[in-house]
Image (cartoon, rainbow, N blue to C red):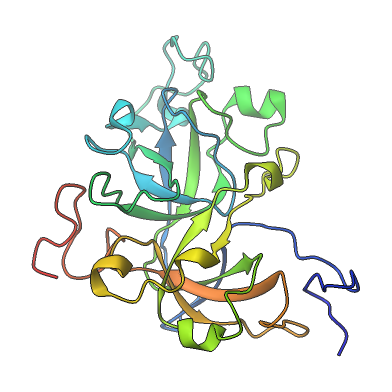
Length: 263
């Protein structure tokens, strides 16, 4: 079989570059939901953001410096201290259009001490500011105010790269939890693509308590021609762990109590 997606031991075949989470299908089968929403990234944000990154709500226990929200750039007209807004440029007409602050999920953010609440996956950048357009940014650099589009549907199915095989029994790990690896060296500032991949070392977390701390659940190996879950660099299909997602179950999650209505 031609190995299209995977990097084999002999080097034959192409390696699928780490690209974070790639939304593929909705579990409901409905492709027309209005679930992509704008979020604000404040200048206090400490981590660069790329397409395919998991984004979380900024709150008092997670990214405390980023708590709050920001007006959309089209409304901002007065001069600002932000290097992004500069001298404004919006109309200033109408009521403020506030977007909640978001920050990037970091591996381990699901631990009880952090309790990050997932907003969704980054699928694009905008509304664009003049600053980003002039500099040609394809991603959001650290310490840069910007806006980002987030796929917030808790049931969207996504593809992600698995750089190593967890033994030979990947099928036994299906429906288990998974965290991600940051892979900073693989993220692309030129194309704005995330370097996230699945962390195979977290696949075996089978208890409820362990899974509840992880952002993703493993669904399958992905239905792609040439995908081989027994080889290095294969592709898995995942979805958000609803115990971590703000629109998941049970109830609406908060950072201090992600399971307000019981586990």
